[in-house]
Image 1 (cartoon, rainbow, N blue to C red):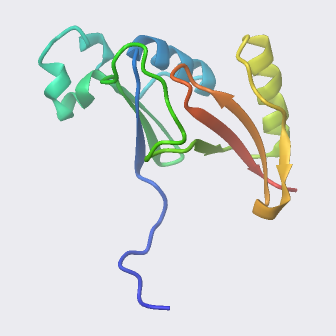
Image 2 (cartoon, one colour):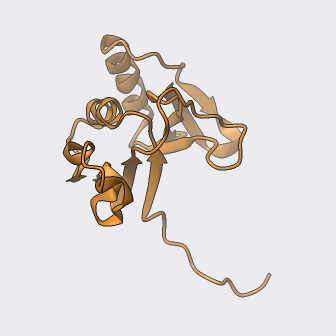
Amino acid sequence: MTDPIVTPLGFAHVRLTVTDIARSKAFYEQLFGMPPGSDFSDQIDDPTVHDDPWRTYGGCSFTFAGQTLGLRPVAPAGDRFDPDRVGLDHLSIRVGSVQDLHDAAERLTAAGIPHGEVTDLPPFGLVVLSLQDPDDVNLELAAPLP
């Protein structure tokens, strides 16, 4: 083993490319039960916003537990996520308990949002619940295996 180049402490942020910022923002607001902390989506019709990193290209971001999930609206309409291409396979979001996963499954069902079953993954020490975002990005809610 060699000395590490860096000692990671977690992720600062992850930004997803989306096709429709209003639709994606509404989905994640509903999923997380909170508005974005940073939001320039109301400027999406301003042609200068698409080149402006300071206004997150017309996107928004949600911050929780010291980490940020950003949405960047630059994908063409009709484009769909593909986990078999170079880049992101899925995004796993940690929750507090297996009960939180069961509660989330009930709320997703009540909201009409399709999802998988709460599933034990013993080799990883996790229990997960999968769902797709509006651009078909696979989201995994994960809790430690009790």
